[in-house]
Length: 422
Image (cartoon, rainbow, N blue to C red):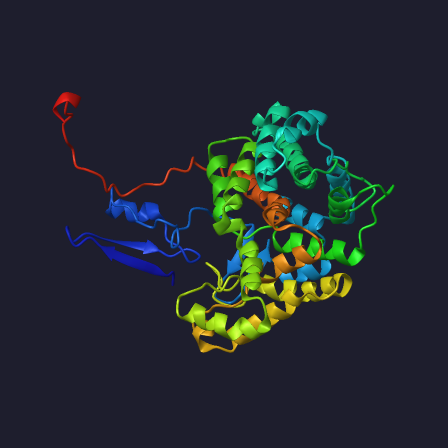
């Protein structure tokens, strides 16, 4: 027997029975009974704005799957490029499909010289790398005018490949410019993560050899950050994409949302919190401040997860592997002590406040040498595949342009008063 909800309009006595489909109800059905009455949900906390087959997120049970595949299996056995293919195409590639995909991505990593020389180098020396990245991604729209033809599937997929391939190049270039260092060209003999590390850290050596443990750790982080359902930046991507803006402009819009500290700045906030705490001796006192409402426990809790973030378990193990190479950081000991105290306190566990992916990611990035102003940039590189998978899905669904309703709270109708008599 199908599940339904019955709603009655007490003003008229009219009722309607609405089916529950996969945990949701169709707003159009409600609208048949209540025309002109809107659901007021300012932060979309109880509103589904998309039907998507890309990422399944069960926050109550701590489950995250890409196209049905558990994130734990992908992080353990897959690579970022394979996961990117999965997100875009819906299935894991065959060996032949993956080799063709890898070749395409690898050979589209270079950017037009004018992008670098006349655009990126035009930014002030202390420009934030994320600001450079957002602006440069938008500028690519002018370098690839064929991107406007989003109805041509082959042309669209060419832009998808270009964006996934060029994002690490743009990201590393943004950092090098902000650090006053010369631009490093991609090395097509390296894999995705190692190539990015080369563009970041290469100095005078003929070929940069990334530590394989660090390259793999970065690849795992890229997998974990590749998509996360209908978050703020993905919603921005789908909103702008629904206007049929090209993939570069839409990706720049998504990256702009990520640039906001509430979205992409969580791991920076964790580092600042740990710096403020200073030592393990101060952990208990800081936790008490949090309980009194005088401080925030950064990196704990999540808008969706009401259980342990499955990505946090993977990233914690990755942190140990990284610190085996880079040397143990006092901040890791501090983080572990803070996690232990918080998870043994009913105040936090009763509120479902468990570590999320941001609690350890910043520590890993810092140990690998990335400055904090690059943390959000590192987030944008892998999330590009997720954003683009939602963009192409939106087009396949022939979605209408996004246009939410509002509850008007302004003045009632009033007449104009001439300025001399006001």
